[in-house]
Image 1 (spheres, rainbow, N blue to C red):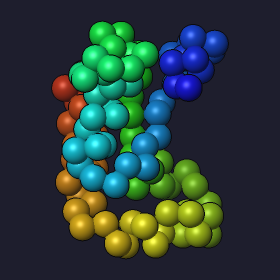
Image 2: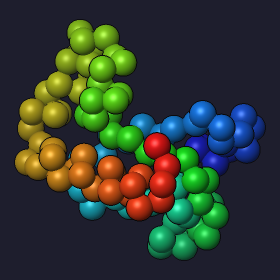
Image 3: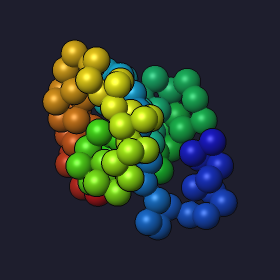
Length: 101
């Protein structure tokens, strides 16, 4: 779906917001949309979009969502995650290593 959206509207100004629950899954999805699918299994195999990925818990995203909506939709999940800082660091590292975002 992300590839179709990028094909339709282009990648200028496009970001991907993840809600993945672990550092490993977050890194994999961030790499997939930025660099291309590292497993070579999906439509982005070898064809990254070069768009930055952010996690919904990152301040850049969280600050743009109404506080009540955020708490209703993300708050409980965020509280139950074992290592949210590792998730945020994994996504940030992919952006930094690719010079996006």
